[in-house]
Length: 334
Image 1 (cartoon, one colour):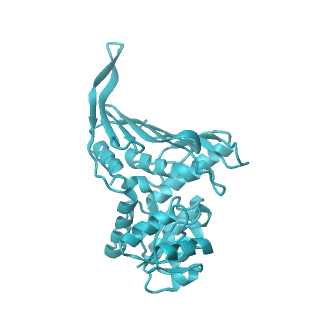
Image 2 (spheres, one colour):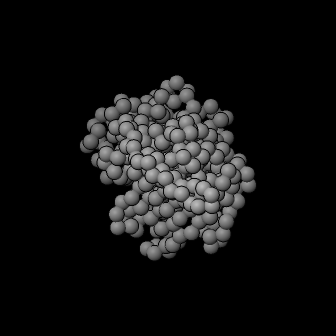
Image 3 (cartoon, one colour):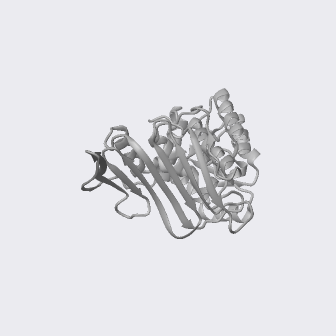
């Protein structure tokens, strides 16, 4: 059975999915109002405000942590030390050394450590990854990701740590490697020190380039990833109702010193109609039961954390390039 730690905005979605899978036993939250809501919606679930009660319960094999990001490290570490498998929402932690420690503890205790990089479970993203892996797009030249909306404005973390982990995780997966260099810029308009808009540029060793734009001060919702290859291009649009993934048979090249543009049509790629969070939760349960290695394991979580850490250092240095000194954690193709 699984215990859920944190049942706020996102935790309620986890609660619904884990409950519907029949594996959720207890919800832990510091808010009496939240626990009252849980008891009203899910009368069969136990509730508590004391995490130690959940960790001491031998019938709880795993926990899902959906608390604020600042608490991820300590709660995840405590759960691993208590012998629990852990699904922790992104980001894995806020500092690289903390991420390293969580991986060490998980290995020593032989526990499943999975990070909630939700987009990696999206059927359209899985299909896109397959197209890239099979060479349908040719060599990946650049990836452009945008995650824009009006809200939800955070007070504990800036837009880079709130929005960008999704995009970084997917770009690392598609690129098949960690970047050599990160450049970031951003601005805080609403609260001092908490950036509302930011951009990240990632330079890879093979010449590929990634760019991420995130903002919670935008007039409309946009969640789009463009992948430009040497043969074809693909667009994943998560806001679109019925055209989530489109393949463009187009490109450009220079022939005889003259640039030539080629356009040969587009194809709507059919994808499974499934809720990504449901697939993520199913995968976690499967990993707990079968001791399977998660798709979004601690290593991939740490790879994302290293990029976010480099972005933070770049922001603090006024947008200066920050090298990642080789590829200490490789976001491998799966």
